[in-house]
Image (cartoon, rainbow over all chains, first blue to last red):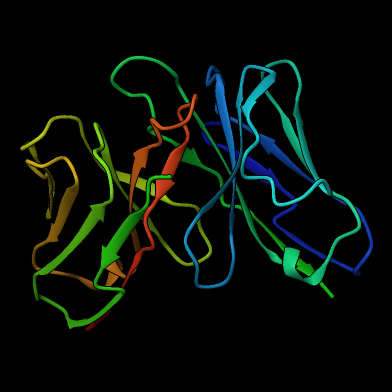
Length: 116
Length: 113
């Protein structure tokens, strides 16, 4: 597709269960980002991929959170043993890297996670 | 690390009014970006600024890159109901080794017809 695609758009899970969130970036974008947005809050950086490697994982809240990217394209964010405080909208973004347009991110619509 | 503070936190205005909001940083930025987030959507880039003092327009929107490189301003003229949303400023975190964007705290705009 033309834009960043995320799935599922909504996920309701029980505390303690694992969840996987998927992101399909814009074709040709080498950089991929995950952000988290809690209700009424700004965007909290989680992790950044350049190709398949993650040079910056500094925003991952705990070791329950992990992410991978394969083929320089699709990325999966996994949250293990979910807690209620994990409830938020998880936003994925992609961008070109290098040159003047570095940092211009294109966001997906997000995956809304609710942990009961 | 770098932090971005936006003001005001929220604005409630009448259709047709002009809007002004700003973003300040504790450190220098070389790029300023303004995003808008509609309800239930991801943020969308409105304007990108790359040079201190730069003034850039996009329709009814005008943004400026502050001379000190520690602030930026966004103005919306003749507001309309579809301007409703959250406006975020953002800049690259050069303190780190990557190109991640740091986002401001956001300004919520409500426009009454």
